[in-house]
Amino acid sequence: MAPRRPKLAVFKFASCDGCQLTLLNCEDELLAIAGEVEIANFLEASRAVVKGPYDLALVEGSITTPEDAERIHKVRRMSRTLVTIGACATAGGIQGLRNFKDVHEFVSSVYATPEYISTLEASTPIAQHVRVDFELRGCPISRAQLLEVLGAFLRGRRPNIPTYSLCFECKRQGTVCVMVAHGTPCLGPVTQAGCGALCPSYHRGCYGCFGPMESPNTASLGARWEAMGAARPDLVRAFRTYNAAAIPFRAASEAYEQQEP
Amino acid sequence: MQPGDSVVIERVVLDALLAALRERGYETVGPTVREGAIVYDEIRATSDLPAGWTDEQEGGHYRLRRDDREALFGYAVGPHSWRRYLEPPSLVRWRGRRVDGGFEDDLTPGPPPRYAFVGVRPCELAALLVKDRILLGDPGADPDYRSRRESAFLVAVNCGSPAGTCFCVSMGTGPRFGPGFDLGLTELVDDARHDFVLQVGTARGAAVVEGLPHRPAEPADLTAAEAVLREAEGRMGRSLETEGLKERLERSYENPHWDEVAKRCLSCGNCTMVCPTCFCSTVEDSTDLPGTRAERRRIWDSCFSIEFSYVHGGSVRTSAGARYRQWITHKLATWHDQFGVSGCVGCGRCITWCPVGIDITAEARAIGGPAEAAGSRP
Ligand code: SF4
Ligand code: SF4
Image (cartoon, protein in one colour):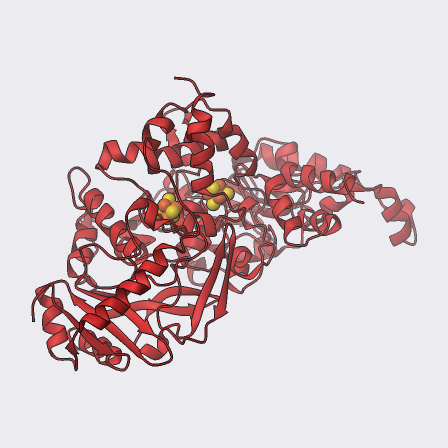
């Protein structure tokens, strides 16, 4: 008898769906995935839902509402392995910007009837609520890295997802450093590799979509940005994007905010 | 014609040289302008070379500049090194396919690429000889490197335009090349002429030159070439006192200056990735989704990643200071014990391409310099 295929479920919290879309975008590999796992719960692809428990849950999005703070525990209980995907799930996402301000002010200025809105003060990553088996970074995640994590899960091996800087990828590809050769501020040296150094290969500085690398020295990089002409508010904005609430980036943006002239 | 001979060729003959190398089955690789820098890539004709370009280099700073002498090799080294071709950044070492009851090899290695490197700088030639000790010697001989290296044809070019981060004179590796090249060029360019003095290094180099228009080198040509190099020697942007440096570094493992470097160092790994003598790689195994194929790749790694020093239970070098110390003491001290030569050839790449401009010569002075030695533990 053929072994039972592992059951895969995809869950969404506060997010834009871009990361689960990466799974759908695995066009060439999608058949292979469907051959290896039973896609039991993936609402973006099909309304047919097979009940849990699941062998592998991919969790997208951050926790921003009291309901979601409950629901994530249910997801955890019915998932043998839980992998968070994307900047929202691993760091709180762009909606983590609320963490720096009073969320009630946003609510009252955006919504006609603020009483209908029930939301939390902060947008938080999944790992702050439940145990997470593996975190896959990126805004959005990289297709190749997602396939690597799935392949590793299926074979019971450790995924090859490095945590060093983006610079490793630029240098291996032979991309010329935009900071050194063009004077373009870049977050690459403090950002985790994974995207294939997309922006520098188009002569842009890195925006930090994959979040802080393993030992980010934001103070040293920030000092270099300033020497290159960046102002403190530029630094606050640079560290405050998709991974604004990731602790090293948060600490950096707050430090530069306090130092603003 | 034989090794040791010198002739003069005109600038236009360089195209014939490239054509002759290509006719012999070499892929000609050399300097070319791309993305605002002089990088290495395939070159088919001298029109691909960085004619009239030079570079301005400082710690964490590189800019291309026009130079109206229209020299073809009027620049110093850029971000790439020949390592890219001799030890590719990502190389499949093994591939297997599942078959009934086991697996079979599924990698059919093609013939090794045959490169002709055009524009090998003296420091780079020295770096290749350092690499040969490591990757051709025992233990650790690398058959892939051997096949690429042995078939590579080297056209060296003496250096007339050192950069602000160069210190080959201190390391004894330039600006004039030592042995190891097939053909060696010195560019002579001014208002009156644009020629090359060409030194023949090997018999296969001689065979190529015999088919090219050339004339014997006159004493005046050799004097002109000598003058270019004399002048270059005096324009080194950096220097490094190597006398006693190894011993001073070996006494400085507990020097507080490592923590000071750690405040600036990003642990980004750029210095190691641009260094022509760095050779560290890691091995990554991967499988496809159905589990029918597996692959082993060798990819460039760096002592600046935490994983690099992972042994059972954790990483040995977790602080940035420990990682920087490992790098510089390996380059300048323990390399001598391991390979009988310095791990640094003074090319200056790690200084230029460090995003925050950390300077190996300045740090070596601060840490292993005579002034600091008193403050370090014996
Ligand atoms: S250590 Fe720096 S200067 Fe020395 S060979 Fe390497 S990159 Fe060049
Ligand atoms: S010395 Fe410079 S290039 Fe090397 S790891 Fe530190 S910051 Fe990066």
